[in-house]
Length: 387
Image 1 (cartoon, rainbow, N blue to C red):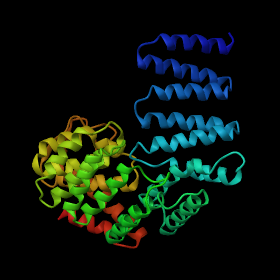
Image 2 (cartoon, rainbow, N blue to C red; image 1 turned 180 degrees about the horizontal axis):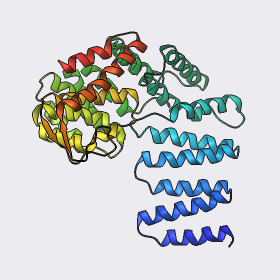
Image 3 (cartoon, rainbow, N blue to C red; image 1 turned 90 degrees about the horizontal axis):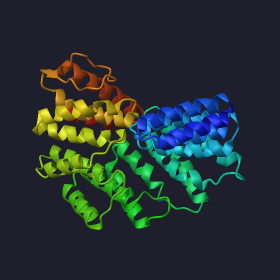
């Protein structure tokens, strides 16, 4: 039978199917047929259909990587370009940044080597995000980060943009090295400069300002900025969820009872992508002081979201989980995900074992970050949490 006819018959079944799992299985069957007949475009189109049936970014990414391999094998630069942009966008909705760095390297080489085919402007938004993510990857050296920041600035200006996008990773870098006064000054520069087409959305800019002020202990200013955010109804995919989580965490550290309000709001805004784990770990840290049983329920349900996360996320999550396990006791956690390294089928855990597991992660990453950053900021954060 002609394979195209086979694919048509499967497509009819897909159109008639009502069950999502059945659609996924039929699409996988069609993909196998297309691949066996080296039909590049049919294989890629079917993979796009399959991704539409997936709820989680982590489910879509492996399919995207398959499509990229097909495009590269057929030397289709345009398809490889578009797919890598999509890959970076998808990984932005996860807790990790694994495949985006090589994808961005490929994209930058493509725009440099084929200016007749690709507009550099098409990759600048993703490059801004990768520059920020590089700060949170302890394996990226001090010198590499400075080079990335300068390269981003150069490419932005070459394409007629100002410093709007450049401020995003710059502030992230200042936060990482513990230069909070410097970050506050950069925020003033950013606000005075104004926005352009490569700036973060207004909600994200306000969110970053609130977080830096919270770290600096400027709680009233941070809450005033939060009220302004609500008044202007600023929001995006991550905001105000991330803002509520930061307020709950930092206000609680200052023994400010207003933290409870933001904990409840943050929990209400919790999404379904693993990228939410950093904020959620702050909510778990907050509630571990006030309702340990509720904290354990949240930990039990979501702890696996930090697996394979980038270094910055892994450090924060491990740091925020510590308080949950400071008390030496036996814990019953039957609902933990089996993918966790310490998973036990019987569901019984010694709290000090879990404490040591997360402490080791936080300590190892603190040493790596501080060595890279040439500061002791991460060790100080760990010391404050432990004490």
